[in-house]
Every structure is written in structure tokens, then in C-alpha cells.
Length: 112
Image 1: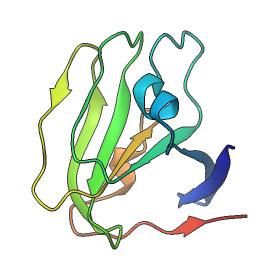
Image 2: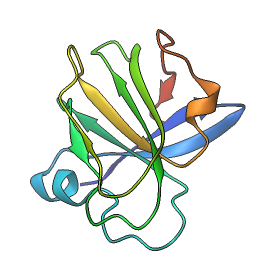
Image 3: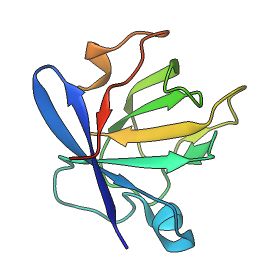
Image 4: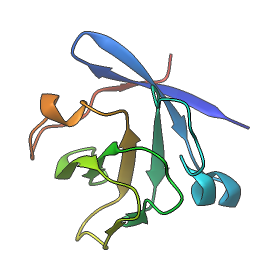
């Protein structure tokens, strides 16, 4: 089952997929050649890698309350984000999203 949510960013809604199954968490955006226009949420996650990805993404790490802890704008393929203290959610997002946020901001997420 795919759970869709939306991130409200710069007066736009960016579709997010909640990745909870082993397969969803394993694959993420790996092997995707089309330009990334949606995002993925990885709950109970504080580290990721970008191996087998073909394009850059923006990555944001938040705590349980969606307060931003770390921003990784334009994260290139074949990189590792090591575990982040108090990290609970990792958001893999299209390029350019990080410029609208700062450390300490909170995300606004809708489920419709």
C-alpha cells in the first residue's frame, strides 16, 4: 500500500510517498532516470546513501516533530549521510527545495 502525503512548499504541494516497507526503504530513488518531481519520507531513519542514483536530490533530516535538524542541498549520487543525532524522518526531495527552509523550521505536511 502506497501512502501519499503532501509537503507545502513555496505555495506548491509536493507529493510525498511514505516509505515503510523493506522494499520501499531499500529502493528509494535508486535507478530512477526521469527527473525527480516528488519526494519520499523515511520514518524511523537517521541515515541514508545515494548509491545507484543518477541525479542529485535535496535531503532534509527532521526530528519526531518535523523540526529540521540538517539540510543537504544538491546531494550527489554515491554519498552517505551518517546517522544524525535525534533524526527520526529523512525526506528525499526534488532539487531546489532546501532553499526554502532553514535549520529549526518545521514542515507542514498534509495527507490530502
